Length: 313
Image 1 (tube, one colour):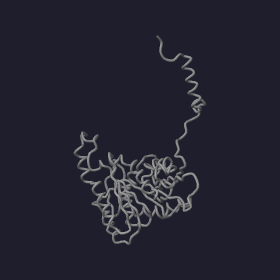
Image 2 (tube, rainbow, N blue to C red):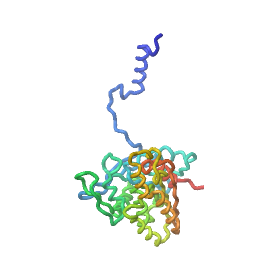
Image 3 (cartoon, rainbow, N blue to C red):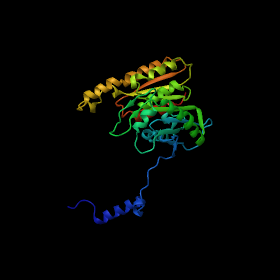
Image 4 (tube, one colour):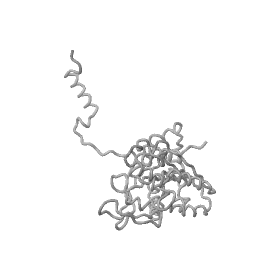
């Protein structure tokens, strides 16, 4: 007994497939995929320093009466597409998501297609005074840290006006999100310009970095007047313990030692408690189950949007 399709049946299926895929039938070339509703432009940079690559997404529809809320993202190459999808998929359905209004997304990245530029983010996101480290690759440039003040000036003095020229924004509803070194920068920027954003989200912040130099700046914030900032600190449950898939790894003991030295969960909890004691500032901690330092991002972005855009009442 014969099974399967006859030649006539196969020909009919092939014809139907080509009808469903007109670009293939006509021989049209593939096109680069695009982020719906987003534009990109370069900004800043001078001399030998390259510019930053900015991705701007403005949702469709009428601008709110007070202007658009804006979510700024560090490591924009790695996270902007995810944040845009959260806005596009969730924000139009407030009754199902609790997101009160649509919002603008601004990704602050670097030229190129890689998700991270390790050399530049090491400089941009870390507090002064900074140090110099050996190149990550033979013959490469030395890694320098301590450029957070210059990067903060770029964000406040160059980038925010550039965004305001492109869309009408609500200056009272501005948020910034960073992960790892980016989370470290968010906390440092909070101590230097606490009124710059209404919401600050630091995921897996590298508080331990360079002998916890950040803590000196936090002491300055404690002496400052109240500022009304809302802060969310996040960490993954497997940032101080090995994830199940890591427990039999050949380098598991070295991994355990690194987790113990960075103390991401413990230090993030302690920072949350310390900030919560500052008058006029609210501070919340969230532990994301089942996630490591490198897998926490999607949930952290979801939590950031909910924290920033949650409906009241």
